[in-house]
Image (tube, helix red, strand yellow):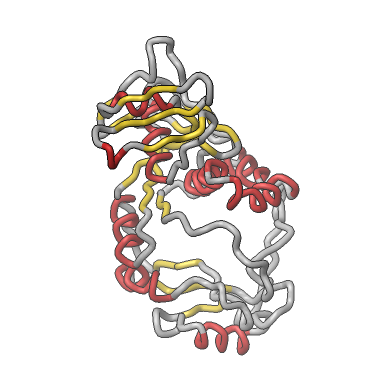
Length: 291
């Protein structure tokens, strides 16, 4: 475990962290004593008393209490554990300390500044016309990407937002309506918008591919159950998707349970497996926090 930037063995017996239902569990005594506190247990009641040095800091907790883990701690814990070998995640990805692995940068700063910082850390510099692929959202759907979040990044690379008419109907099935939605949602004030099949379409055969059961065409999505976590960036298109899924799996199950059920019941991990198989990127990555 890593405490205040310094690595410590949990105990002399080689105890390792355990992830149960999306929570990282560590022995209370190991953590508290490492930061200079004291832990005692009442054998009769089973209550653990924790003292961190003053009466104001003392608190009692049941022996079965579990410490909540925010993503910054997850990043730190995963990186620390990877220092002693690769970590295979519950979703099948691999986190490693090896410098040769794809690097995924993480920030909890969900803002234009946070996005720019993550992008700049990636070291990617596009040449020529930069295409920015995103969904401008359905007309009746209020849960689309905030154009103010991406504006600075898009304009810094002189980018063009690229989209195409949807094949599943909805308000973006025809160019005129699509452009109206993009304007109503503020994207035309951010950059030029190119509807790529505006002047005709073409068929591209895909062998061994897959298709999702849902997409951004849903104008009436369910209420979100999991809070926003952060922004991930990488020059490997597969690695950050794998990192996103891994973060879902280590998030408190009361938030992530429905999403995990949907991923697994729809075989959502097949997309990542197939993408790696055909060489689009790697599910093995090194997670680096820039916060």
